[in-house]
Length: 304
Image 1 (spheres, rainbow, N blue to C red):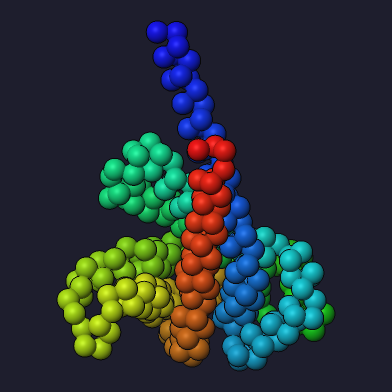
Image 2: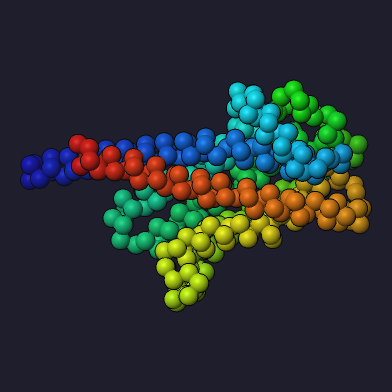
């Protein structure tokens, strides 16, 4: 009996070591992937926010200027708070998805994949959505102002405190405006996550029949996985612009607000469709590949 108890404790300790090593690999994969994609996402989001400001420049011109400044002074980019906000969002999102799936697989021995996938999705949403809203509010607080105040030629990001666009309004109106901005971004992120995580598998099941255009099922699934998140931005971008406009022009009329959104809709939709490729395409592929590599090292180590 004593020998069996010692063996059971040894097995439990061994499983704990394996899970700890697996989780370490999950965290490493998530942080590396987030570090790789955050610079370009920071530049894109900054350009979109500045373009939505009242005294805006053309989006492509703003994007080009920010990219050139980032290439010339990369250390300034990595030192800015907006980069930290972006990195935190994706590092936390990837880490949550990785860790929850690993823990669920360990606890159920991988027997219930539907349950594991559901818990992973819910957990990822609970982390990604509020952090996404937090990141966007910080971005509009930093960059959602007149372009004359933004020093394009000096540095990548000026994160000094700036006057809020709602300072001339009453506190009650400012509070309502902040809640409206947060709610709009929340709805936008819900659409993005649904289009990036939930909808692709549903579409893959619906179009599983042979197709003369794309006969290979794996190629078809990959195409759906890549392009469905991109197309979700057609719906999410108007909400994104609405939230930015509520922040930069909280007292604007509905007619003026509609006109501003219309003028920025086409270029912003295009750039957000392109933006989601590194965020939920390249980033997820890199995260999955690194995670598999780290897990393979654990399987080949003395832990097992």
